[in-house]
Length: 151
View: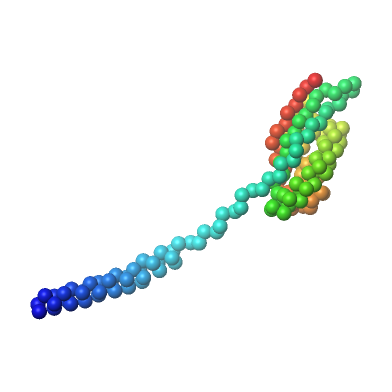
């Protein structure tokens, strides 16, 4: 009989300790941790770039072609729908870029002597993108490669 009483008392103590532990955990630990922890905003989506096919621009001097410039350009766009639009019109974009670069070379804005002025080139290409697609579609023009070959 003593064994049964000790077993019942032990079970009651165990149930009481478990209930007290649960109460302490829910009151002091789980609620406090949730309140103090600030909610982090979701990370921004990765940037979307549209790579324009490389284009070759000859630099014509007084009598002959003096050098050939090969450029690789990527456009940092707002979202995937803008990327799809630009990819669908890649031929038009390349043609407009080449026309603009020829005009800028004629004005002497892009070439400093025989070296390409990348900053001026980026500004010109950004202006063309703003005209073709709107102000906030293309965030930045990334000039990835400029290869100059003097002849």
